[in-house]
Amino acid sequence: MAFVTDRKRATGLGSAKTGTEHFWSMTVSSVGLLILVPLFVFTFGPMLGEPHEAVVAHFARPFPAIVAALTLVVGFMHFKNGAQVLIEDYTGGLTRKVLIIGTICLSYAAAATGLFALARIAL
Image (cartoon, rainbow, N blue to C red; front, top):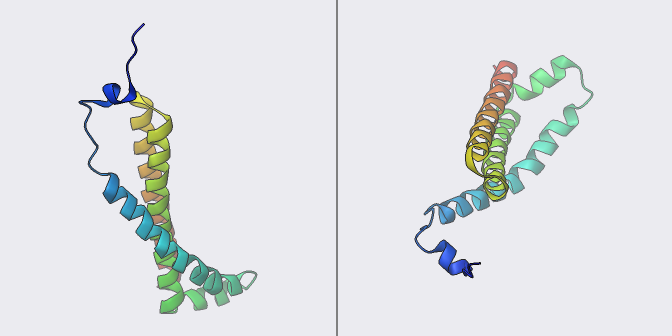
C-alpha cells in the first residue's frame, strides 16, 4: 500500500497553461450573454404568434437580425466552452476526446445553421 499525497501525484504533470484564458473567455461570453439575452427576448418576443410575413419583415431590419446573430454565436461558443469543461472534469481517455470533438462539431454546426436561417430571413 503506497501512501502518496495529492501533491506527489501531481508533481511533473505540469499545467495545461490555458486555464486563465479559458476563464476569461467564459467570463466575457457570460457578460455578453447577460446583455444579449434580454435584448433577444425583447426583439424576438413580440414576434411570437405573428404571421410569417410580419416575422420576415421584422428580422429584415438590421437591429433584430444583428441581435439574433450575436446571441446565436456567443451562446453556442459559451455552450462549447462550458460543455468542454464538463467533459474534461467527468470523463477520460478516448471517451473524452470523442465527446469534446463531438461537442465542438455540434456547436459550430448549430451556430452555422442558425446563422444560415437568419440570413435567409434577413436577406
